[in-house]
Amino acid sequence: MIILGVILLILGYVLSISILITVGWILVVVGLILTILGAIGRPIGGRKTYL
Image (cartoon, rainbow, N blue to C red; front, side, top):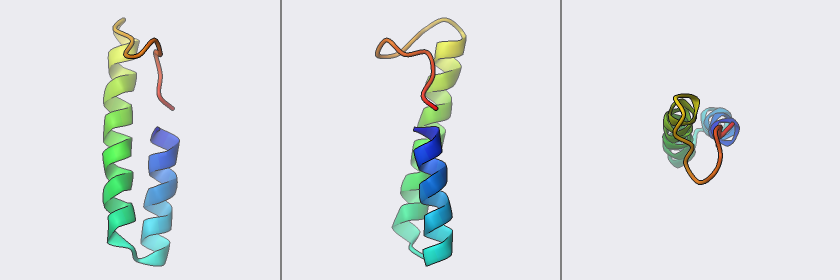
């Protein structure tokens, strides 16, 4: 999820498409939150990381 967010951010900046930038930031933030929760011992959906 984090990697997909970064890819969308890069594409959004290169192609100047604001919706890709917005969706990219949302995916990065949600992926980081889920990864942090997994790291402290609370896996979400059976996964500890969402890279």
